[in-house]
Length: 458
Image 1 (cartoon, rainbow, N blue to C red):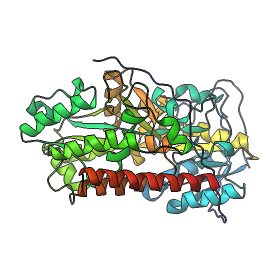
Image 2 (spheres, rainbow, N blue to C red):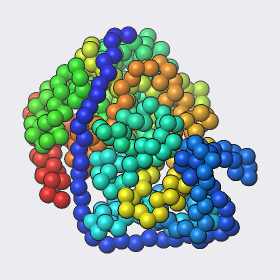
Image 3 (cartoon, rainbow, N blue to C red):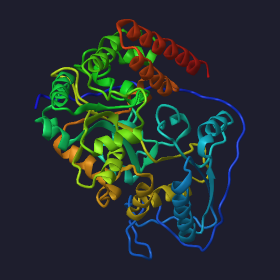
Image 4 (cartoon, one colour):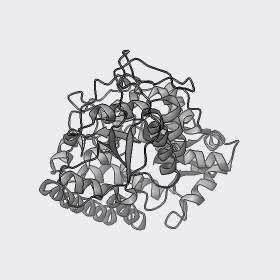
C-alpha cells in the first residue's frame, strides 16, 4: 500500500445564527434514587450493569432536580429515548422535561440561541463546534472522554482541545463495496489507493458486465462527501481549505478535479443506464444481486439494507480514496447522537449525571440499535455486534492509519450547501459536457457566496 500521509487541519467554520420563539414538552418523575456523576466512582445499578465514565467514590444526589433535554428524535427513536428518560427518572428521582422538536428542531434551536434561553442539554445534530460551541460547556475533563473511539475526536475536538459534547454514536462516510461483484471481475478493492486506481478498477468491472458505481442523479454525497480528497487535504491535487473557509473560493479546482472525474466516469458508462430515474431502493436490490460494485460517499447503514436482501452477500466499507499517490485516504465522520450542556445551565451537576447515564453500555447500545448508527464510545463499540459496527471495525483493522475528518460539507461549506450539491449532481447528470460542467461550477459558486454572506450577516 502506498504511503499514507497524516493530516492536521487547524481551521473550522463558525456560523452564528438568530431568530425568535420557543416551546417544550415534559415527562413526569417517579421513584427516588441516587446515581454517580461524571467524575465519581463507577457503580452498578440493580441489574448489575456498570456505569461508565466515573473515577472517584463521590456520588451526586440529584433527587428533586429538573433538567430540560431537547432532542430531534421522531418515531421509534423518540419512543426509545423516552424509555431511557423514564428509567433515568426512576433511578435518580430527578425530572427530565423532554422537548422533542422533530422537524422543527433546528429552527427552534436558532430561536432559543437568539434569546440565550437554551435547554440544559440539547442534541447538537452535527454542529457542536461549527455552530454551537459558544453556547456549550467544555466537557474535555469528563472521564468518559477517554472512552471515545479515535475516529470521533477528529469531529468533536476543537483546535484548543475542547470537547463540547458526549457523542454516543457517529456517522461514517466512505466507499461501499460489493466484494462478490469485485471478485467476479478480478478486482481487489483493498489494492485501490487513489482515484486513478479506482478508475482502472471500474473499467475492469464494466468489461465484466458489472455496473461499477451506484448513485441516484441527485445524490449530494456523490458531489461533496469525498471532495476533500481532491481539494482540502495535504498532498492532494489542491488544498483550497483556507479559501473555502474565508469565502473566497472560486471553484476552479473543483471543476478541474471533481467534475472532471465524475464526467469522465459518465463518459465511460460507469453509472446505471437509468441513473436519471433510478431509486435508491432499486439500487439496493441491484447491489444485493451483485450487479453493482461500489457506492461512493455513503455510510455502512446502506449496506445493512443490501444484507437484508441478500443474507449471503459479502460487503465492505472502505475509506474515500486519495487523489495522488502521496495523498490521504480518509473517512468522513459526522456527529451522530451528541449531547451538549448549555454553558449557562443552572443544573450542570444534574446534566452531567444524565450524560454519564447515557454512557452506560445498555443505554447507549439501546439507543444506537434503534437509530442504526455506529457507536462512538467503547462502552458501545465493545458490545455492539450489529452489521454496521462490524463493517466499520473491519475497515479500522485494515486501515489502521486512516485519516478521520469531519464531513467535508459541514466543515468547509456554509450551512445550506447540502441540497445545493444535490441539485448540482442532477445538473451534471443531465449535461456533463464542458459547458454543463461550467454551469455546475457557476451554480455552486453563486450559492456558496450567497450562503457564506448570509452566514456572516446573521
